[in-house]
View 1 (cartoon, rainbow, N blue to C red):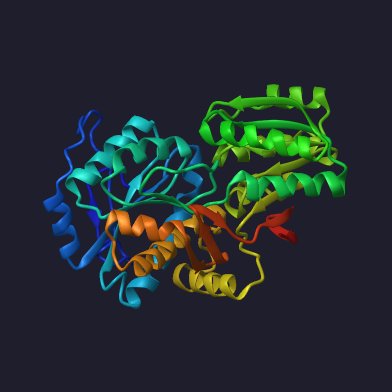
View 2: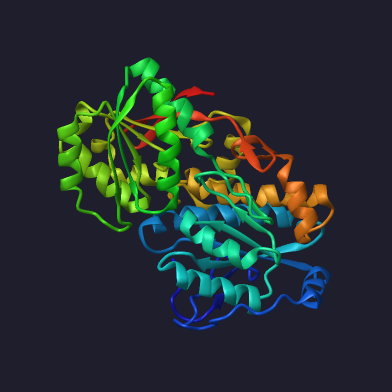
Length: 393
């Protein structure tokens, strides 16, 4: 977990180039310093590439922090062992992106103004992305790695995660065709990813001949789901589509299973990966489906290599790695490929190269076309504490 005390470096077992940053005092750095072109030139002249990785170590999405950290460290180890990016060794700093968005923005201002980072990388909720992109725009590249609602077009922001059109749409059609799903109930956390994703999801449900019988958004951090389950039971949906985040998804799915609804009602979740599944527990995963560009059970050479390296570096008892955590490995692999194509780590050439590129990671080959990530998409059913791949599109 991220220390809440002073900055520490050189933690046991980690290279000294990995820094864990603590949050600034509330109210610190109330303004954004003006862009300094001379400082940018000095950055490019030094040997180390300083990447500020904004991961979530607290709050509902904090459950992904350990696996995300491990995945980033694995990528750094690989890349540095092979000469870094354009000959520059990566120096990775971690910043907590949990808590109030304004507090995360203050940490980002600190990182940009005083820590001399060259690149921002993020695996956090979209509400944080909207705040950070206002700070990075026109100043520094920003790689955003996890599943999200799509549509990110801010100059310099490179989003590589799954979006509803490629992730949710095929899953909805599959459930309609194979399970006769017509009646849908949508429940999500109350922020931008579920809001925007549900707008698209309703279109896909209509395409598949279904209709929505209920929808609600739940405050992040809310863990009393009795009223939600009562409304679901009353509307009798065929499928509950779940866009709850982190531990909120865990508590909801536990309550769903314990209520007896799991035996009669299907669930489709876009952010339930192996990390969340472990928290839900084997007794509460009946009729639970997920769709993702990555599951750690994928039988491919790329994933076999990734999982072998992950286990070798962190041990057999390491936090289970799923889509959200693994996306940090993908982010650094993408950054290296884009920098090599551009021949530069400067904002504009790097961003231009990143809009149309093919790179390889644990997901296999990923093609970015006009800023949209295309990859193999998998439908999986929960099988106890693991997933079983049903179909790959």
